[in-house]
Length: 297
Image (cartoon, rainbow, N blue to C red; front, side, top):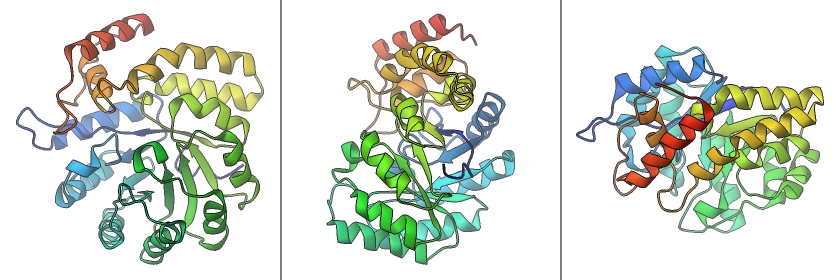
């Protein structure tokens, strides 16, 4: 099993915005501290859930610096884009902010070849000493990172330390884990796939519902690691409605998460266009789920 260097329960944190759409730095600090106090070992900033594509470079740096000063847990900065030069530049800036790693998503929309993907990840790794997690999420990017490419990068590039796996194929993930060094870490990148991926050797989750279920997820992982599969399954079942809620097509992530944060009285605000606005029905569902889980303001 790999090295959970960023923790076992890591939340891909939303980026809070004010009513006028501006970055809410104070809100981000408050939310980061709350998450650390509620079961999270580490945080990912400015990933997809953090609306990275609509947060400009200077805003990203401001956010990374503020959260770095606020919490003493591993921080991973989402620095990936579909432009290798821009990704390199952002990763260099992230390193200057004192983060502990970079999350580099597969270049999206332009659908590079596997050779192009491999060259992209190698170029980013060559430009920084930061540990890098590859983010493999073909449903959003339009391109799967081939298993042989992941294995080769894991074996040949020392600073590529793992993958955030949202590819939905635990069998292929098992091959990656079996064929990479012992300290190469696979994180579930899909809350609902966490238990299956733990079974093939994942070290934890970079989650979304962990905004409000961090402690429950931590219990589930601990139960699994003790061999108490019954408890792990029971806790997973308790979280299933939240997993379905966060991924609804009527309002894709991070809208549902921000609706839940509003229900809990935590910073989040609206999503920036084109991801907002959050429908009233989603806010109502957040209220229902919060009630069923016994979560209160």
